[in-house]
Length: 534
Image 1 (cartoon, one colour):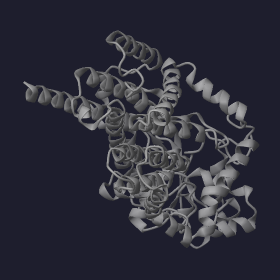
Image 2: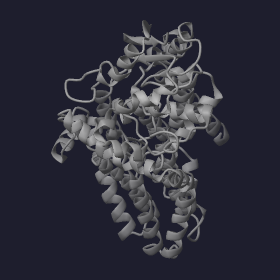
Image 3: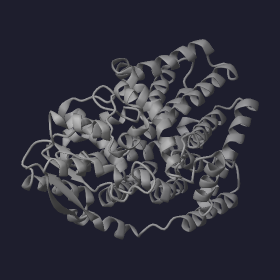
């Protein structure tokens, strides 16, 4: 009977997660396309097709490790953008499975208890996983080809390694080394995840000092050794292009703040407005208020259990809460702070909620039932998911998928420009069809729109191209086509300059006798303009 029950539970989980895969896929293929995605897809294409490296061959304004992911996806398929989105979805599936694994470890005092998963826990886990993939702020990062998924995956893996390492005799052990490597990989994918490095190090040291599990100095060296090993590719890039690395990860951040100040941006510019932005984003959703309440409770409970009771389970909860809290605090660091930055702690908050058998583990069945009902009510008020059938219906026809529409549009450019180089602030589009592009456009509008804020001398030092250098850059290799209007609805170089970022491109086209052709793209209602070299 026991074997039959285990087989049935395994089958139910396989069917459920197959449904989650289908749901993620439907989100991925049906979502509109953001210009934020270009700055990750295009560098991956440039690495896969031309061997071009960030910082070394073009300005890049993020940490570099997500480029490898999108280079692999571009090399694996001719549908570069769709493949990048799907790779992102696979990583999010990995994140969800890690969330479940970590939550089970948090809710169990020992590993054997994790293997005996009750039907009640399966229902609880499944409910929260379904809520997570329908959670509004989470949807933004779940369905877009950004760098969040890889950073989150590495950090959840580091947390899982940490909790597993707590149960192994003697420190340091391999979990210390690999957790340090994973945290470094997360930080070198998305900069704000560097805040997790100190959180996990402190937790390892607490384990060594308070619980007497090992020598703190050896733990520090092992942890740092893992982080150093994972950092070697980034250190190599920094060594090859130190000024460009400095520009992309420090100077650009300051320039971006100045750019938003000149645009008279109101939200997220001061601490007060950042707090207001955060509160405004969570206050309409009772579920979010619950998640942050759980963060506070789990932090206090984990600290008390780790310090007073010397509990491994309490230290594990403290680590999970610390990582959620660090990512929440790091969302306030950029200026402006944007609402989607607060999506970073969400997977860890759901882990805490999912494993929140922690402080009420010995509570009565009535308390557990009331708590579960309360979470479901909060979720129903906070999310408005379509029925699974409606969400999955989009998988039946690929013609309506924006990634497919982009691919067909890119191939259709050959009717007008048979081959050559295309200038555009959305280079992932011509790269999809095998055209050459100008590497300075790899980040799309971002480095371009802040370039006038640098002096001419600084632009030379950082190898940044601005409108002032455009003519000289194009002189030796003029574009065969110039594709514009992707930035038509967005802010330009200054105030009251909507759509102005592409004006230097159209001015160059007119000056050099290019002919304009107006094109339509199914998911882009405004239409696009292709300037063709005579």
